[in-house]
Length: 139
Length: 318
Image (cartoon, rainbow over all chains, first blue to last red; front, top):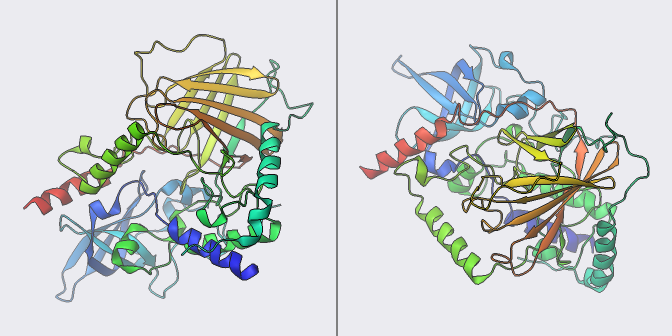
């Protein structure tokens, strides 16, 4: 019975995994243009509906590209104690995402990590932070 | 794909009936906290974040309520599958998940009743079938979404335009993040601040009639009254662009708010729209006290996404 139930749940969650983000990411970014960017933060716009992280990305030829990376709603992070000061200018990050359809230097921050591979911010899965799925039940 | 639970179908009728009865008789405590002017006090910050699905999944057909053990397993598996850090399924799926898990706030627990759906009536936990007229409207919208026109902002959804969020209500239902509400009361009025997306509902309680039929509003026109300890809010006068699961402008919603303990608000709503649904239906979405805080979701102020997607469409035009 236990196995049957587990299988049932798996088939449920596969069917309902569609994310309701603020807009269709597929309309803004191009799934055929994956990018991996290693850069340093120059500023963060903590704005709704989506935060934007600006990074400088050094090129092999010595020039620097300035990219804008789209994240999610800042409200959620604020509730977890992330503030404007949590991602200061100069922080090195790695962005794995997709470039904007208009070809400009914008991408969604599909996966943002620190250079050593650690997840950015405290809310990521497995950290035990508030709102974390691994968090023990309250009360 | 669907693995049915043979053992639960035997208990379907009994469980569904028992649950329907329990829901209908929402517990009404004798003494509830009251405002200085004597109304039941519903004030505070509340959240409805939950992993309980809106409709009962087909593979849990016949099972209205999970056992504690099943609920824990359901939570574990749902949280795992929803984890946006998962990068599998190809680039389209990867892009569709938008960004890492740390931006999401969906809740991690099933509702306290351990029901398998937020929909409580019909007893199968599913939204009733649409009428042919409503189905035809839904098909036209699906076709428009498939074409995804982007000649100007008016082509885009109310969500992308920061006008109306489909979970904001009425009725208020949980989404992927910002599932927070603040209820404020004054003599003769209740106000509900909805984090997603920056709306405040101001509900008169003084018995005044609804606005004239010609006045149509994104979130309708709400009027409230007290029935014992329960706040009953009736909302009509929606626009034909306000669509809740296929509803029409003639949608009528009745919401019921009962504070059943200091930390729990029993929130139920009934959907009555014969033009769109083959029968009326009801859902229960309990809210729990939260510390918040709620921040202003000033959606339109920073909506770079709209510019970017229109530019993307122009680039594709070339």
